[in-house]
Image (cartoon, rainbow, N blue to C red; front, side, top):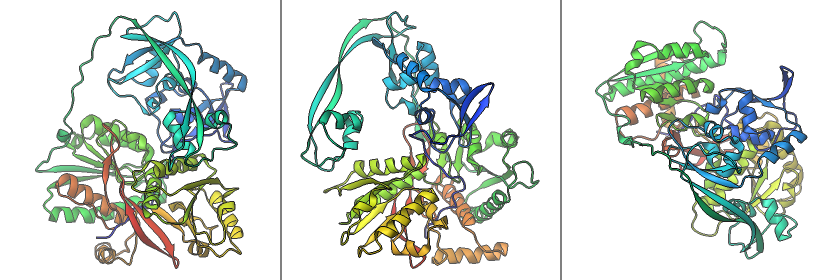
Length: 586
């Protein structure tokens, strides 16, 4: 069977880096707030960085967010002027020592910070990486000022910092960015100390890296009690049964109530039509199961009432709903009941965290852009690679992840140089007789259209081969003429390869028409693939990975987290048709 994947029902962006120039604001109780709507992959830390507002201030304005945020959630970010920010920065200084804290069950960054009388920002600064969450028995550094009375701990190292300059010679394939990440020093600081005009470097260059040298003097403090942690054998999470119960939650909107959209209703119906065909196939393969189908609408109360139904006491798997902001409710219930939860469409990656019962059927945008990096790295073409930085914050995240993946993925041989540039300057690298692949990870039509217009003007009189690597969103951009996509060999990564010309698709179309007297749709094929894969793999315990339009390679996203489909397709537009070039599943 061939490969395909779904219409992405909910777009997943990621976290943000720079404050928007025109952020929406509102006044509440006489106070001014930025209004931020959570996008896929957002975190409190990312929102803090974007608006330059302390995490504690955001938590205070939005009670409960310390326990997690959801895609689509409205967050009020307090407006803080520059003078206030200066005072906040002063509170981050003056710490004379650090204490060690071992994370206990149920503890969060917010709770730990309050326990020691510090801010979340200060806790994160002392423990890079914890902004993504803490784990039981993890040891944290807690910065405290002199005179602070410890709740309890083991050792207080008194820390003395002194500036140290490292003389460093640039190695092959290294960039200023990769070096800054290795030494955890800002690129700007390396450039300034080294007396450079910009961040461009080449192998053999001598640079200086400013770091902090630490001296520790241990002071004895009373010991805390140890916490017993029991390990759970992951093989026992799910066991095979003679009969299964599977719930399918979809927003059919049969009563057209609040939140009704015809599009959501149609997609739900199409998904179920495909899933029903897969269920028939599973039964022929020997699956003994009872299927329950529910109209979840787009209502939290409705979903909670469904989960309280008596049949859910013995449920083995839940598929859906389609709205990502409602998936968290089901995910938490499934974790508590130890039931498999299948996200059939794009979901917020946050629900995978600390929940090994969650399975994301679609690769995220981050996974797709990493697939593009893997493809271009392993293709080892002689063309020059030009990476263009987009404008929108969510696209800058994709840009950063492409760059990191390209530089960090294992590779045997000489890694081709990656030229990093901007929308304004990329045209300076487009030269006569030099073939180029230009990567522009933009999901925004305005940005993408501006890029293409500049490229067209820049290459009007240049005879050279140009390949443009964009995103799947470009397929819907009406402002970019299909003829130019052909001319510039438009490439993109996608979660699916939907093609009516494949023999497997033709056969399924015949079955679909006989069964429903209707033409098959992309969402119907996705419903078939998802239901068949998880039924065969997880209920019948048989190996399978290939669907009609979706291939599956479910990989756990870290210890204790959920699973994500890592399969991505490399597609190209040729003669106004979309064809598959390759496939990645790292």
